[in-house]
Image (cartoon, rainbow, N blue to C red; front, side, top):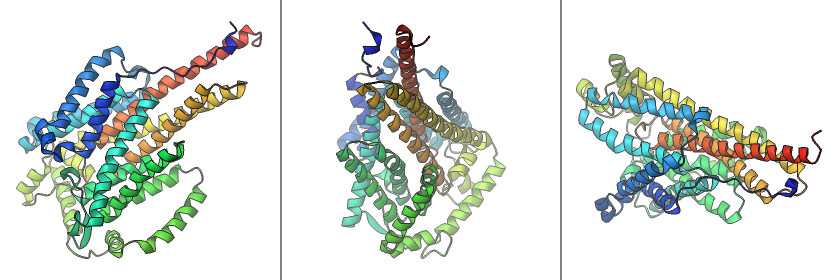
Length: 460
């Protein structure tokens, strides 16, 4: 048989059993929607814990059959090392925590639980299809959270006066505070913005716009100055990633001039109060006082006061109990200089991993285009592979944008013990693993073409 006529088959990926994938996606939805806080039966059953336990046992059983190729994936390995060091930095603080009860509770209930998401993602997401389903589950869960808050804004039952502004709140405890609601809403924006152009089906495009609309509604009506700063930081990132920066600025200016007069005045004033006088309350002065107290605590305890222990130390030392309201001071006061260094390593490792995934996707795409141009009848497998590469490239941009947003939110909020860093770490590792598989497949196609040319006497 002439090898030049052999059809090109799509790459084979390792896939977990369908039932395990279904339970994993259900776990993701349950985690972000907070099923346990919605139904008494779910709380009684500890539904999120039970789903996570099933997925964890499945991953332990499946991993030996499909080990991760981390040995040759330097960016993913750096992310794994960084989160391992961060985990260790928290563990060594537990025996010395100023508030040992809170420290153990936060570590067990948040750090270990959320770290499992990275493990689940790395084991179970090994193909573009699995990644599609995971992102779909994530966006669906976030859409549910933001749409119920949007309905609460329309009906009025989730919006009430706070600090002189009518502020929107979430429907479940984890998103109840307006800043928390704005934070989860901003996490959706990078994925919709950068994935939307890569979606081919029109009806899927329309569905993707729904979480963007509800997220922006939640952001506006939350009255969260932290969220507003994160939004404008993301706009800067979006402009930076745009290949046509001049046109982007023209469109953004036109949209801004159109939308600005339509914004409710109280939220415009809320944003302006970042640098000006607040309408009511003294939250800005209170935050400045918190930052000063945090700097003093860090200077006196450079090795840290322990996991989630800053409020206890602040109460004992100053008679004030609020937490840092700043991610970087939260890390510094809780985990010390060593924790701050490790956390910086994680941020750098994440951004480098996403940047490397972008470069790799583009490199593979160029090689694939060359193969397609040299083929008289390009196989449909080529087009599917190229579409997947464009999607993964966009996902790497979105992942870096997600980290950028979290870093901006961290200037006025504290989320060291939240799921966001574990989500970003899992995403970075999964992208590296999938792209490594795709690059190996393209290497195989190129080797086959060279062999075909030699067999036909074209390589002499």
